[in-house]
Length: 587
Image (tube, rainbow, N blue to C red; front, top):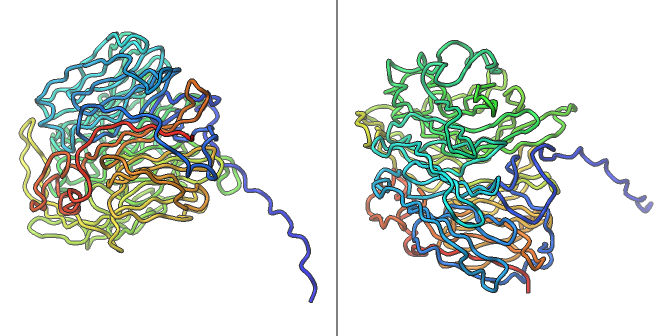
């Protein structure tokens, strides 16, 4: 028997990389929640690696003093860390140059207390953004604030939302060139969605684009060239709704914004149409549950694609959009990768809006796939909500296969790391009447564990092949973000409070630390003034999934928190309210 000859090296696949114009050389800082405009949440720091991460230990902690859901990303600029709390949205600056990182200053915007009553899904805040010597962030009562990063002095404050209409702001702003991009929340209150660009130096509104209504309100003009015919036509934001229903149509831009400086385009998703009951709003309900590409300078729409035309299940399209350059079918393409609530990972051409791929990453029985010729989602009629009937076991549930909590991309592995859920639901449509500032839902929902019984999952996704390489099953839904590093380590947190480090290539859990409360925050990493690498996470359970704990809801009320409590009855048995920053390093 002949001995095998030497193995020939396989030709390397062409690299998948973040768009070159979206990233800057690694400087050890973390200045925006997504790390860069491509939204990769990837750091080139590699002192902490797959070999030594098991030795991580606590470097310091800090109590925020607010025991609600902590969804924000800790930022690091120079020798200072910045964190924003849930309502009352206190901005803390911690001095990293001193032992224990003592408080440098705090800024209190004092938002209106009544905002807490109209926040649908906990009083969360998804974090600040550093640019131009300032920290920018939003308050629950609908204001955007700019604060001097060195002194904590307020530079400007602009009121954008009206809590009397049920309008709040929970998203993290994005600053690009001289603009601050902000979108509103309130889809469960019939609030009409918008995104606005503010002048970064003065706070003045430069442009504002609505998600529903006539083209002039949506900033659709001669430059608008959508890829699919179903998005072409005049004033579709009116004609795809019953008369005047677009005025309470939702489509709120409460999620993530990415930016391609080379194309000068911003990308962001729009939320669910209102109300949830789809029979009350026949039509495609433009421009909700989709994604816009807009010119940063003017706000004019370049293209739009609708993930879920005539959304049936509250599938907001606001999740993260990762901007990558890669070969697709042998040709270089500028793509946008989006793990959507409806259960598919989409790959789009970010210049044109063409769907190149849409593959399921979750068990799905409510739809049958995406037609790449028309771009349209194929619906399973057996799972469509009907008035007077309880439709059972719809998968995924209303919060989707994954919600707002962002994935991370590593150019070293070419994989997308997706923290997500495994939930289904029973859905009963009901009448809904619009009264400003009150819930406008029209549905009774009960969520439940999906197939297999695990309610959460952490998945490493091969973008090119459109399939999962490995996944880690979790008992509770994953509601934290992910962080990837050049040390081939990926971090995420669980709702029981475990902060985990896993091998980016194999999924092996390399280290875990039990924090004081469930984790729904966004991990970040930075190089400290001492030259060492640190990893930071906010611990404090809450958000929609954790509202049973943060809002102290009755586990016997199956429809509480818009039905999420039914799937989370046991969360109170494993965690309690919290609000603490944990920072780790090697010995």
